[in-house]
Length: 230
Image (tube, rainbow, N blue to C red; front, side, top):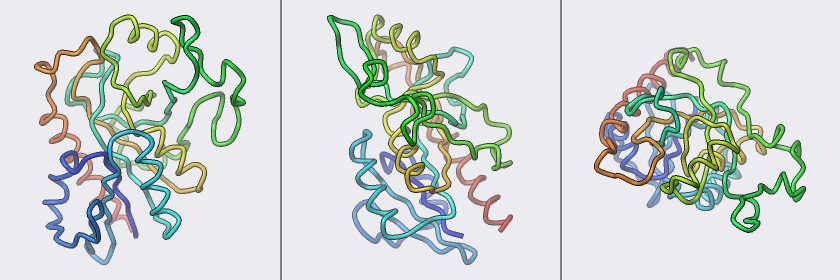
């Protein structure tokens, strides 16, 4: 089995890289290890959708994987999804593709620049229909996410996004992974751990290390369970 782990930063997956004692670094942002006769690769894509689309597309033009897993921290719009909680993302939307019309954001779909069901979109959403196939994440809450290249930290904008998109969490790379994998018919998952609530920026309230620790606990369990099942 070949698994590709995609993360924006190495910090977010360092505990898992260390767990597998990975010493082979093929290039600056790519690690690989053979484990129990399976191959696990780690791609550090960089922050944001643009670098993620580029780096992931480069990899997938050269080889296919049994599974791509996008992992990272995220902000929660919902108080019911607390800090440190690991979630399974089944839907991504793009939150900054459109126009600003006199202070009101209108999506490219609303403006008819893109059809709501133009492949790989389904009614403006990028949807992973395979999440239920992976029993290893059955305990993780399934959520809808919004991807933005600018982290939200202004209350009026946050309220606008919550009202328009009706999502649970926010991140910066998920939609890019969904888009590329759906276009390439590549099986994938997205796992996120909550480091903060989406609110006016107050970084002293963020718990990044807790989120990373819980994220990697789940990631290691997922990898080990997948490999044992093969």
